[in-house]
Picture 1 (spheres, rainbow, N blue to C red):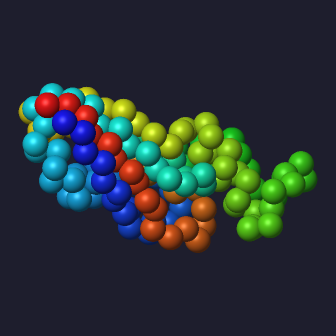
Picture 2: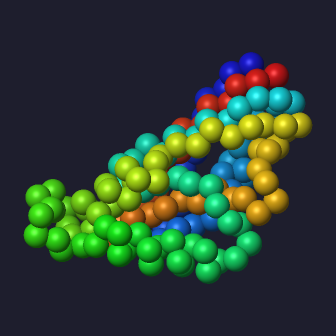
Length: 139
């Protein structure tokens, strides 16, 4: 069986946000799959998806602090600045972290590790809602 569905993630401030519950809350169809794969594609170039620690919020803060230093704003070598000083750094962060995840499905649930959660990395100061295309395949 195959299923594809577009979800909407709520607008978030810049930073890393645990969105596992937000995604699952819009994906009741997952329960139909005993075994399979879930592919998640964030349809944007200035945000990211990644899998990481789901318990300690300090991890999200530390990631944001690290990536701000890794791709700082207002650099003289950036040419793509028409949408503001956070635009090109957001694209760099998105390229480094990626915009998709492929996760196993077991008995109607995402087979995540005990301490794993899905993060939405929001890399713009004034971003809106984000579209997430989910493709489920399996039995």
